[in-house]
Length: 107
Image (cartoon, rainbow, N blue to C red; front, side):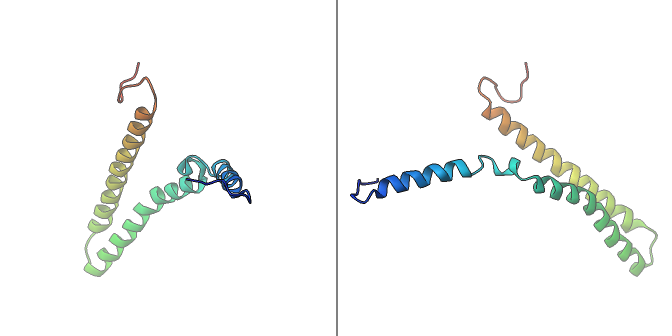
């Protein structure tokens, strides 16, 4: 609890809190467009990276492109599952935060 001081310390503290509240974004995830760019790179480069690793394994092992195709499909399936659960969690959080809505039911 703040105590009134003769030097006006509580007014300075209150003013600092007000400035901090105004200057801080409410939802940092939505205010950073770089997060979307990073997500796009993740979706685009993960299958390429897994395909390159699979290609390297196929070259060393002397096999047909079994590992190349297998790791590429594995990475795509993993990305799809990950994105599904991220979207579902975001949708459920938004639905819970919206007053008058119950769960994921739509009217």
